[in-house]
Image 1 (tube, one colour):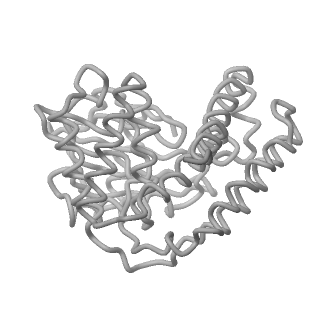
Image 2 (cartoon, rainbow, N blue to C red):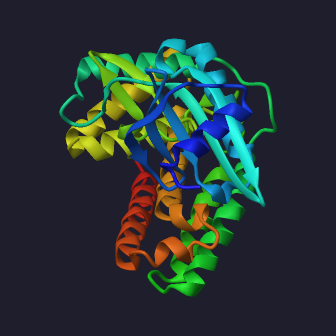
Length: 322
């Protein structure tokens, strides 16, 4: 089935009991590794329709994003798109999943729209999201995450000598020691986190904030979201001085709101970990990762080394005696 085959789209909707008289693909909104988002007109009404890549092999991913989006809407309904329905289709093991959502207006949070007012509005939204304690699902064990992360990265380095395996192993050893020495402070209540706070997942419409793409959302402690915000927004759209100023303002707002005395100690751990996860995004996400790697190996190496060195440099910096 091609993405522009309208008969196949209609078939997907019919399987859910939806029978539009007219359907038209107006434009492609976003193309990512995991999915493609289209602007569709169903009987003259416009919707955002997310079509997931077939490699997910079933409905788990679609249902996960739907579930997490609905959970987030309980805390911040005005900042999360409404979901109308989802549809799945399976034919000889070929799975196609779509999520039909409200069309969200706004522009991505770039340097041109970033200012103190937008920042304050965004922090207000995030604090509301993180104020709701999550109680479902197993707690994430960071020790298990570290072991898994280390195994994946060292396996990757066996196939590409872009960095010495010993160097990466030593970095992980240092991160593990830091975590184990402070394990008690990481036993925090879990909240719903967005999990992918990059500038293009935050839309601004006349000062109003909307958060899109909840595929990476989970129930963890909010410092992961704050560290991701530093990497994916502040570092990406602002200069170094402004990024640091707004980051300190963010941390102070959370420290006061949640009476969180160890917030920066935890962010010191999550920031280098998330830099590593960004460095190895392709081998973490794609199995076999070599398919994407071969598309532009040199660009991948540059991205990998850049994020890895940020992780290493940041962690060495914060470990210096005060």
